[in-house]
Image (cartoon, rainbow, N blue to C red; front, side):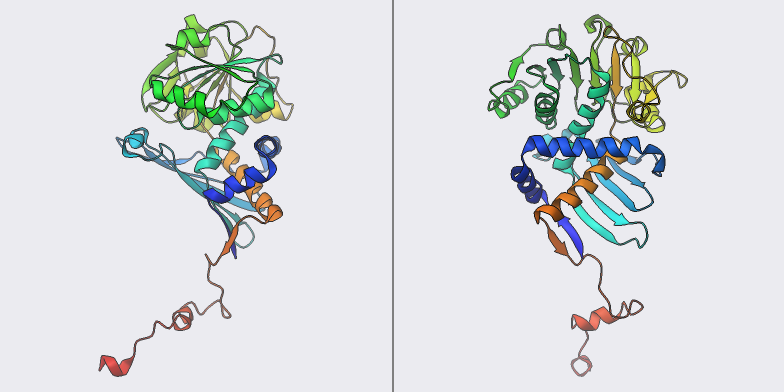
Length: 349
């Protein structure tokens, strides 16, 4: 039987153990797999681009498990009442190819992106960081804010979005966190002034410039999430050139990230090297650091792995017959007789 986890089951698991524990455990699982980077068979995602969006397949495996995510990115979907990003994924045994898990990944992608941001910030941001700006207040913004508040000690968040209703939505959703101060601003420059961390997470599929050099102060940590496909950027090239840059998987980020604007030889460091102790992260508190995050399959693999284990532990999930169970594995046709799909020859005559 294959385990099925739908959107309601994800919500039930979060409610059962608490959002802070859920995020913390997912972060730990992603970090553990990043530290074992070399054991994974990796590739850049396979993307099918159109004028209105992109549909992608993100596969990865180790010697025991194979995982993939199907995900789209369609910025205009909100006008149709649909999510900009929707996803599902699967986890299977390498030894047999048997699918162990089929899971929703729309909600989970927001969780794993926030968890990845925390994983990176812990080794790249200044240790006393308390104020963060979030530019772009769409579907994933509250997950970033919640994770940074609960797990990194951020207690003040400056927000800006060209859509005022998005800022109002953000502020309302986080109003229950009494120790978190949220302030709306009328432009990016005002929102990022004096902050420790900047998270950029806009959705437009354009070569945009959200951050320019005049907005950057010594020691800032930029958590760049919105530049995540060819022709889509958020950070001015000159900002990139003055910073120390970290990425998930260089081969993929050169194509999709903000560093697509730079020469291919411009140095970047893969995050796994810092997490495993092979490379230093921040050199000093005045250094400008950028995490150019595009989202990588290892993060989804780690999220699926975590969900599978948690689902079995909590007893939340459903077993489904996704793959046929046969007495004779060579008799696939025999399944038709079991479901009584035979034709009555006398009626046919």
